Image (tube, rainbow, N blue to C red):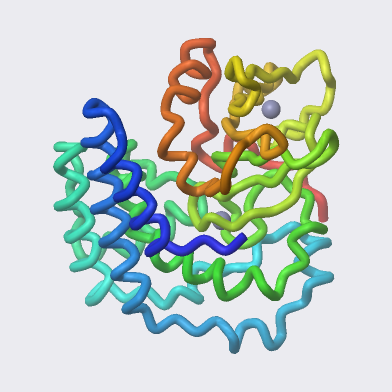
Length: 275
Ligand SMILES: [Zn+2]
Ligand SMILES: [Zn+2]
C-alpha cells in the first residue's frame, strides 16, 4: 500500500475532528506537523532514478544493506538548516526543550540519526531529526519501493532506510507486514520471529490482544522489545496502518507498563557479521 504524507495529514485532521477532547488536541497537533511535512515533500526535487540504473536487487537481498544511501538525499546546510528550525519551532509546542542545532551541525546530526537511529543528543534531538528527515525518507521510499521485491527481503529492519518497524499488520497465520517508523515502507515478515533480535523460540515470544482481538502487541523476552499492530483479518473497514499508529497510544502504554520497550539505537541490535 502506498502511503503519502498529504493523505496522512488529511486523515489526522478527520480523526481529530471526531476524537474525544483529551485525544483531539494531540491528533490536531500531529495533523499540523504532517501537513508541514507534506508541504516540504511536495517541494522536494529528489530524483533517485539515476541510482536505480545500476542498482542490483541480488546484491541488495544478499547483503541485507538497505537500498537508500543517505548521500542520495542531497541535503545541504544552507537549505536543510532553515527547514530544521521550522520543524523545531512546531515541535517545541509539545517538547519545549526541542532546539535546532547549529547550521553546521544540522546535516551531520541528520546523517548520524540516519545511520545509528539516534543523534546521541537525547530524545528531543532524535525526534527533531526524525521529523525533519520524514519528507525525504517518505519520498525516497515512494520512489524506490516499486523497484524492490519487498516480499523477498524477510529481515526485521526496513529494506529502504534500515529503520525499525513500529507497526505490524497480521495478514495470515504465517505472515505479517511490518511498517518502517521512518519512511513508512511496508514489507513482509514471518510471525513467530522477533523482528528486532531474530529470536524464534516460542518460549521467548508472546502477544497480547485487545478484547476484540483486533489490536495486539507482540513482545520478545530475549531482547525486551515490543511491536504494536493490528490483525487485518479482524479489522472492520479500510485499514490505514500509518494512521493507526497515531490512534493507538494505549497499546504503547500497556506494553511499557509490562516492562517492554521500543528499540532505539541500531547498535543495540547489531547483527552478526554475515560477510
Ligand atoms: Zn524505512
Ligand atoms: Zn527480540
